[in-house]
Length: 383
Image (tube, rainbow, N blue to C red; front, side, top):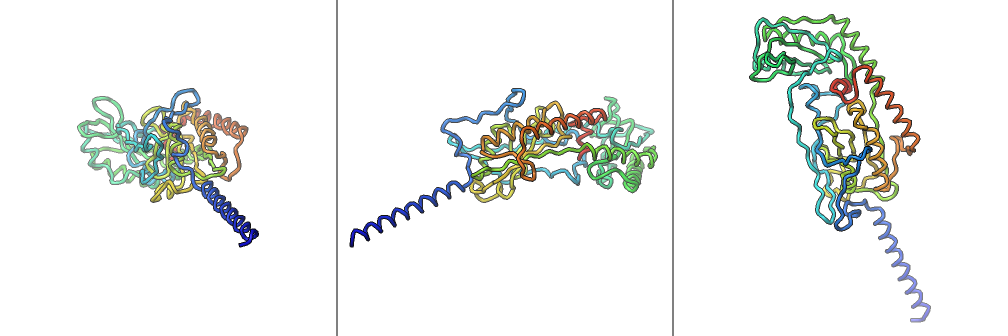
């Protein structure tokens, strides 16, 4: 073999080696980042601080049941169903797996469900006290009137307070009510008539005499409340997009966990719990549920995640927008991403400042209407 042939063989081998190395590098760069990439040996996951310097300690996701009467969550048109962990991946580091924690529901405590501000209320006069068992047995099978929640309360003989009926209690007065408006629209004539029929049947079963308000006045009040709600409903969402390498579900969970997020009960969802138990979560983080339920989630590639805030469901004092902004910026920096709106346009600091300013005006309007963000009334109206 001549020296020329030997040289060509060597050059060909070098070119082949270079191509193989380049392809391996491209493959590595294209692979989704996994949780173990960013954890150095012995590194602990430290919780991030909130905007006021308070550590966001690990908490469990609260439920919504405390402030919402039975049946309201059933078939609410815009409310997300309850989540199930369903295969959401946990990242693993050198210290062992980072296991997501499934949050238990808080204890349900009976309390007043009706409020004249957002409900039609019909008093049900009783000749004699009735037991909680009798009230519960007479309740209709469904607690909805059309698209609106229906509820019955009793005036507890011992405590003197209105509450959802309970066994082993006695009640000297009852009242039935239906919500005036929600995100499905205002109470209409047909729904009001259905309310009258349902409340009358219940009253007959317990031996009560109902006193129904004027339908026209209540329907007009429902339309006015719906007009206010339509102009003051707000749901914010930021999208975090990967600049270069994609992310695995475990990688996202790892970094979100450092900011205080915990696993939700839907695959591909995490939440930042409120400071008080039983309150709605401050923020939600969501990504492709199919990626979370894959056979090997760590091989799933995520190019974007969404951070969202249900403005009317979270109390102003929790500083939810500041937390949303902080979380988005922290995740973008840690995961090499960019914060955008839902169209993909980057969100500069000036745009976020304007959003924050607009939210203050919204909070003021809700406060003036006695529908403060995060209150039970606001959470029911904006659902």
